[in-house]
Amino acid sequence: MSREAACAAVFRFAPSPNGHLHLGHALSALVNADAARACGGKLLLRIEDIDPARCRPEFETAILEDLEWLGIDFERPVWRQSEHLDLHRERFEILERRGLVYPCFCSRATLNRAIAVREAQSGEEWPRDPDGAALYPGFCRDLTANETTARIGAGESHAWRLRVAQASASAGPLAWREHESAEPSSPWSNVAADPLAWGDVILLRRDAPSSYHLAVTVDDAAQDVTQVVRGNDLRAATSLHRLLQKLLALPEPSYHHHRLVLDEDGRKLSKSIASTSLRELRASGMTPLDIRRRVGLCA
Ligand code: GLU
Image (cartoon, rainbow, N blue to C red; front, side, top):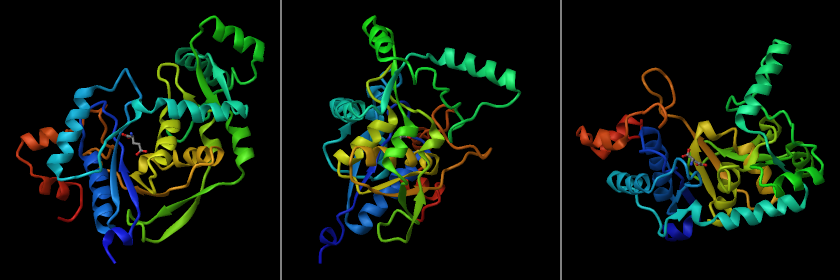
């Protein structure tokens, strides 16, 4: 039996073109590429460029160059999220028709102020989501239809939030299949999803026509992804992705959340703390093999 016949797994690497790739991205891309190659599956590249303020075409070009330098090959054409916003909108409208979303007119500054006041009054920290952000206090959850129609009609800027309690109740208990490694044949266990931990998340941003959670869930299904292999920092978000899959009747991929590459201070690498980029490491003379070793993969 050929490798292709043996494995119909579809993997994806999904970077955002808002900066240069660093070692954390290299680990993720290599783990996906190695697993796809080992089982004769496919590797897709998805450019997650829904944030018009932060994404730039030159970063996309740099991502393609860096992956080529690392020796990572992927299926063509490349999927750009910004070219599939109509799909995200269509799925969002399913949730809207079911009454599972509502417009939210609160700006970040209003929310920060209101939460600071509550924390000062109670002397306790306002509850946080798994990423450490304050949970939405629900100010716009119960506005009347007349009020929201009037405010939208008047052009007031707004996001759309998921009614997570209602959505979760309608979906029932959920779990995802977490594999021990990126290999589809590796042992797995069911992990209980906890979407309520995220509160009423934003599904359509006020400054962008989609959101990470909606776009990633809809696009994984649209691209027939069967194996979602990504960093452990996104593990908690899988609870929401499972909820959206269930609500939208989308297929359920398998997951593996891999370890993160940490800097000398034990912090996760990120573009925002200007972690050394792959192109700087390349310019300093490192080879793709050095990168593999540096991220703890055997050559
Ligand atoms: N675009 C996300 C990032 O660059 C990854 C999304 C995912 O793998 O689900 O962190």
